[in-house]
Image (cartoon, rainbow, N blue to C red; front, side, top):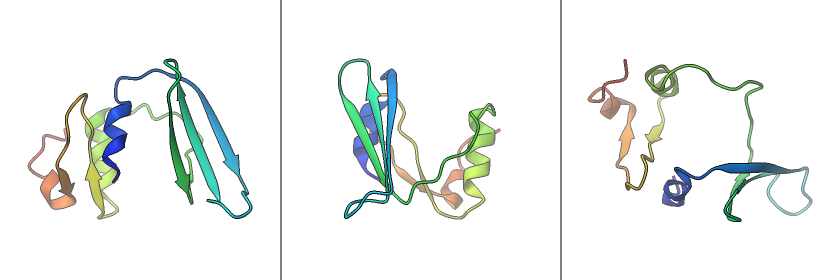
Length: 94
């Protein structure tokens, strides 16, 4: 995962811009535009949920581990370690 994601922690999203069905570029682009004039782009084959998640962090981490991939967390101002699902067992995910 791109460590640049850690730089957006704590920023305030002002708006979201989405580009879809691009010709010759990534199929989908999502730009998070922040109130300080900066923006962050996510691109590729992106799918989004139809709702805002209301579950707590522990439930979210448990759900994310169901798929067996890598989880990377970006706490404010810190460079996180990359954790496997097995490594998450060492975290308190209650």
